[in-house]
Amino acid sequence: KLNSPGSHMDQILIFEKEGVYLHTNAKRSVQETSLPGFIRIVERAGVPALEWSPLEDEGRSAPAVLYSKKDGEAGEEDPNFDPGYEPDWAVISTVKKDREHVQVKDSGQWAFSLPLSELYSLRRARFSLGRNFMVLTSRGGHPLPPLHFHRGGTRELLRALHRYIVLDQSPVDGRLFLAYPRDSDSPAFPQSFDKLHILEDGGADIVSRFIHDPYATTFGGFSKVTNFFRAALRPPEAGGARTAQHPGLAAQPDDEPGFELITCGVELGPRPDVSRGPALDRWEEFLDCEGRVKDPGKVKELVFRGGINPPLRKEVWKFLLGFYPWKSTRKEREDILRVKTDEYFRMKVQWKSVSEEQEMRNSLLRGYRSLIERDVNRTDRNNTFFSGNDNPGLTLLHDVLMTYCMYNFDLGYVQGMSDLLAPILFVTQNEVESFWCLTGFMELLHQNFEESQEAMKQQLLQLSVLLKALDPELCDFLDSQDSGSLCFCFRWLLIWFKREFSFEDILTLWEVLWTQLPCENFHLLIACSILESQRGELIGSDHDFNTILKHINELTMKLDLHDVLRDAEAIYLQLVCCKELPRKVKQVLGLCVPCGSEEDSPDSQSSETERLLLQTEAGAPPAPPPAAPPAAPHVPSYP
Image (cartoon, rainbow, N blue to C red; front, side, top):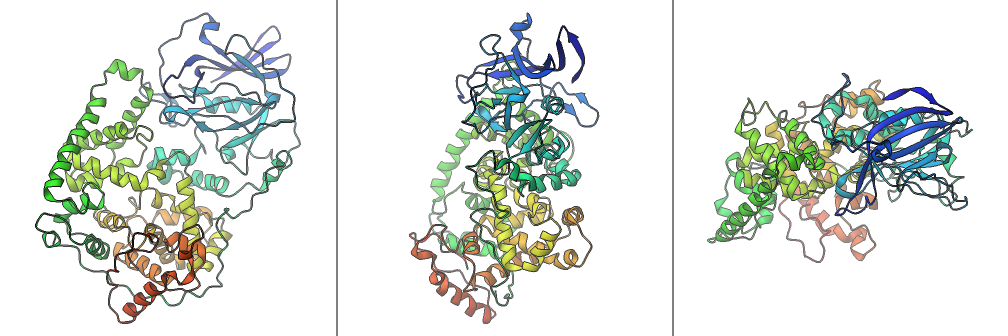
C-alpha cells in the first residue's frame, strides 16, 4: 500500500512493502537461498531511490511467510491464497556498454539503494521452480539480485514508480520494459502502465491471466484481451524511440519473421464436397488373435471420418492417447497397466504424504492445490459425473490433477487443464487410465500452457497464414478492424474448442483430432472453417474490434460440429490440390519440411493430390492412403 509520505530529516518515505524476498542464486534450483526483507521508494534530498533491505537490518526477526492476494473488487485478502496464482515480476535488461559503472550503495552484503534515474529496464523472467522474479539492472549494467514478491505488491510498487519514471515496452521483446525519467522528451511517454499491461490487475499480463483463469478472462474481460493483443501481437507504433539507443537492433516489420506475405494471387480451385462417415462401432475385428491392432491406419481413418461409438471409447482412446502401443498384445497391455498403476500410485503418495507443516514451506505445491481445488468445483458441473456436492468424480478429478503436478512439476497445474481432464475421466471412469491418457493429451498441448506463450503466438500466426490463403478479403476486413491478429481465436486453440461445443461434441472432436489426420494442424483448419462460416456476418456488418470479439465468443454452443468438420476437411483438400500453394501454407499443413530439401519441391505431393482429385470427382470419400515410408514423415498419412 502507498504510505503517506513522512519525513525523517531530509528523507521522505514514499512506498514500503514487506515480504519481498531477495534470491541470492535464483538460477539454481537445488540450493536456493532467499532472504526476507522490505522494498522501499525513498526520496533523499529530492532524489528518489529504490531500496531493499533485509529484515535483520530492521532489528526484527523474520516472521513466518503468509501468502495473500487481493480478492477481486472487494480488495480483501485471502490468507489461504498462494502467489503461484498471480504472476510476479522480473526485471532484467539489455546492458549498454558505453556508460561508466554506476555505484550502487550497499548497506550490508545484499541490501541496495538504486537511484531511479539509473534504472535502465524491466523484463519479466522466470528462474527456478517456475517462480517469477524482479531483477533490477542499472544503466551502467550492474545487475542486482532477483526479488520475489511473496505477498504480492508489484502493482502498488509500479504505481509508486510511475511518479518518477515511465516504462516503454520494447518492440523486439514483449517482456522487456525500458525506463525513462519523467522529464524525458521520448515520444514513447504517452503509454501508461495500464497500456503496458505490467500491473497485477486491470490489463495485467492478460495471457498469463487467461491461462490461470480462462473463465473470468475470456467471459468477462474482452476489453483486456483486446488491449493485450493490440500491444503484444503488434509492435508498438512508437517503438522507433528505442532504435537509436540500440543501434544493433534492426527495426521490426509488422509481419512476423519467417512468415511470408500471402496474397490472393493464387487460384485455389473449387472446394470439393466432403461427406462424413459412420462412427467406429466394431473393435474386435481389428485385432489379431493375440490382441494386436492389425491396421492402426484404418482405425484412425474411421475415427477421423466418423468418431467412435461411445461404448468403444474407453478402449480406443487409450490407443489414440498413447497409453497402449498400437502393436501391443493383450498380455503386454496387462503388464503395461500393472506397471503404470504402480507408477501412478507412487506419485500420488508423494503429495498425499506431505504434512501440513511441510506444505506450509512449499509455496508452489500449496499454490497448485489451491488452484486445483477451486477449478474442480466449477469444471463441467452440469455433467452428472461431476454434479452435486461430495461427488466421487470431483475427488478423482482433484487427485489426478494433483498427481500430474508430481509427474510434471516444471509445468505443474495451470488453469484450463481441468477442462482437458474432465472428458477423459468421464469416458474412462478410471483414475489410473485417465491420468495416463491425460499425460498423452498434454504431450500434444503442453506448450499451450507454458508461460512464454510462444506456441500460442505461433499457432495464431499459422492460422493467419492459412486464412490469408483461403480468404484474403476476410483477412483484409479483419485487418481494417484491427483484428488481424486473430486474438479472438485464442481460447479455441488453447483448450481445443472445449468451450465452443457441447460436452458430447467435444468427445467426438477430440478423438478426431487425436488421429492427427489429415495433418497435425487440423485444429487450425477447424478454426478456418468456423471463421469462414461467419464471413457474411462479419464483413456485412458494422463490427469493430470489440464487437468482433464479442460475436465470436457468442458462437459458443451454436456451431454444428459435423458441418465444421466437413468444411475443415474440404478446406484441406482444396489447399493440397493447389499446385501453386505458397510454401508457408505447405509448411503449416505438413506438406513440406521447413528446411530446404528435395521433398519440398512442388511436385512432391503430386501423386497424392491426383489420387484425391480422382476420388473426389468420382463422389467417393477418400480412401486411406498407403502407409507413408519412414524416411518421409512430412508426407501426410491422410490426404
